[in-house]
Length: 389
Image (cartoon, rainbow, N blue to C red; front, side):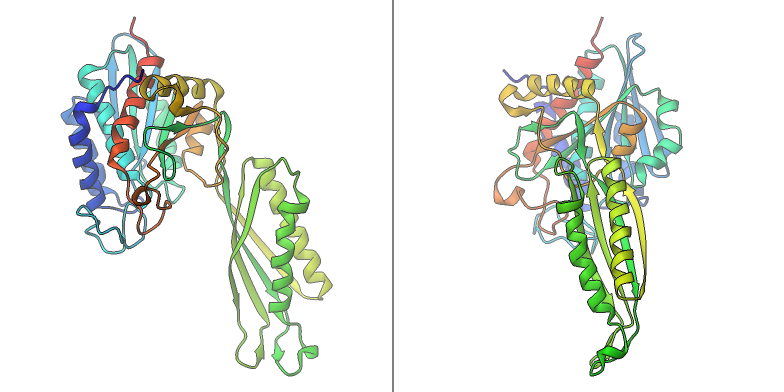
């Protein structure tokens, strides 16, 4: 049977979550948020370090003489989206909202910190990591560069993210690739503009660009091993033509996802080859810019096993999927999981319409019913990995 730990903190976690939600801040500007987190951690009796990786906060809780150290991460930043939920706790900052649930991630980790500080039965050190700028894909690296793992001696690191469409009180994770890399690409086609009535005297950059758009769709379907997951999406097509003017240049921008560095490298190589070949066929020039901004998140098998045990204890065996399908969205936690063995897990945000809105939607809101299950998983994970003597 599930072993609830943090029911007594439900009202407090909800109040914290609503406060964070009403006062969202963008990446590396989380000054109010970080101060509130730090003040709460200090009130629980933790040793608190502010300004780690610019606006990051780290709380340290030591029990007994154990030398093991577990890192638990929550993200703090919001998104540049105008809120449309109509909730009483809706954002008071125009054009900024917690549209990804980071407010809930902070609240459940704070709940776990308070419970463990008061009632925790463990032997070792828990490092509570509140990370800035996850949405930028820069906050994890900033904290790591500021000595996160060396300063606090973290052995393994873990992160929870909510998942709309997964029932509240359910959890899923997997060993190996969990989330995808993200690369942003920009392709410039330099044709020869001219009069729309005399296309033979120029080279229409739109026609060349359109052929490239079609060719890019063959990378995943025909150039990659079918066992390798990837997505290539053209999201912008910009040309300099006019009413009766054939464009002399066009720019294609887009996004590529992959579940392994090798697949990402293959996508880039194929993209460069296809663009070069298509442009050569039309006797024009083309250039490809390809920047990988997120790495894939690779979960450590032993860390996944520990999370699974904690999930079963907190939620019940029927509510834990330890071998879910990988996700093609990206997560800045990947850099932490590259630096230390780690596990990224998903907690259900609910299947009801109000809580199944997509992440990054103006109508999204974190489900407060998920706070206790998430905090309970954290508590059981600490007690499993840092067992009292």
